[in-house]
Length: 129
Image 1 (tube, rainbow, N blue to C red):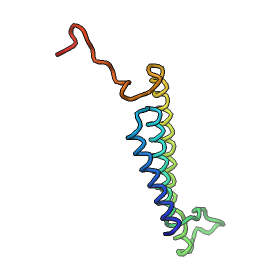
Image 2 (cartoon, rainbow, N blue to C red; image 1 turned 30 degrees about the vertical axis):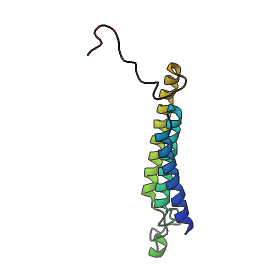
Image 3 (cartoon, rainbow, N blue to C red; image 1 turned 120 degrees about the vertical axis):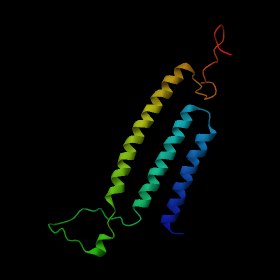
Image 4 (cartoon, rainbow, N blue to C red; image 1 turned 30 degrees about the horizontal axis):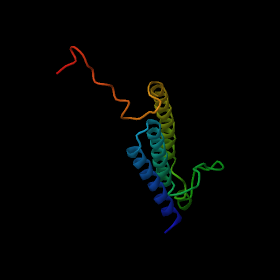
């Protein structure tokens, strides 16, 4: 097994661990943490896939725009890097929003148990059938 395959396997295990934790835990804060682990692992998987072709930064040295085709194959593709950078920024903002909502919910119920956060059923006159 190559080192690249071992890294892919570790990242896929991190994705699986995040998904299992997301389904298993009842605490809302732990669910947000599991979502962060999953998104970080998915971003790492995309970085690994983008680095499969080459690892050299695609910055040309000198004034010549002509590149040897053998050397051009070793360059890393910059498009997935830009997409991943955007995904990191969006993931950070979503995580900040989720943590804010979790903090506001913690004032209502400090345990942050998902089952206890359900709204109680209305009772009294006009409550419905």
